Image 1 (tube, rainbow, N blue to C red):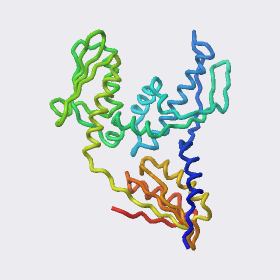
Image 2: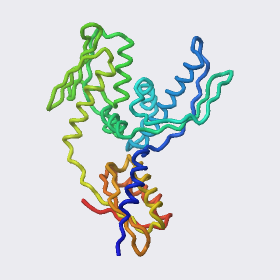
Image 3: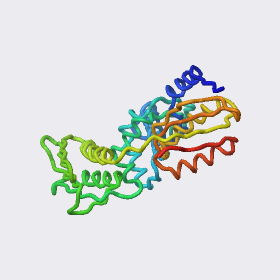
Image 4: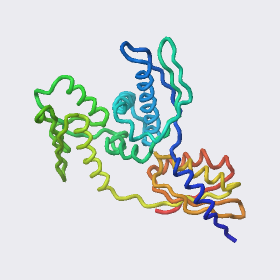
Length: 297
């Protein structure tokens, strides 16, 4: 007879979801700087640690590795915008030396806004291959802003090519602002802000969001796993499976049940990369003596 662990599952899933973010362990060293107090230096080190932890999580989410230049630009970008992606942290140790400050941190990442942020920045779309687009700017743009603009192109993964769509034009707006106008085959957008990065990602975020909406929604698949020794082991796999962001998304545990071979479980998920999921399943499940089956279109 099938036994359902309704209340048991609810209690455990509440715990996992409320603290679902897996902690990233990072160590940061910042050298002493003139005119920077120890407290300010520690805060800078903390921010550096947050950025490094988010970068580590992004590398797991993305279907391919960012090259070194894009990783560096992404981390630099995060230094002033990292807060929405941090769910919590713990300072494991803090040392002040003659040379600087050393922090060891456990950082919990807020995965949902990070995934959305990576999508809006175009990293999911361009990590495998660059986006061919036309980017133009005002002739009187300063050298500093031109360097920043080229960095944004590299970070987003845009290969600048004249005469193609999408096309983005950056102009100087009133009162020290930047005005951006983005044209695609289907829509046009415009945005004004004093921060060039804000203009850039506001417009490209709209473009990539439109591109994702035009793609057919992946059907829900079912992953059945049988042979767990205990419900605890199945629930630990639930936590692990939800961390495989580069292979699956929208993972939910639909059922745990008692079978002759042990505890079985069924998960519903949307598949992003079937080959990567197969690799991860093969690396995790057989050594634990369980079997699995992926079904659905």
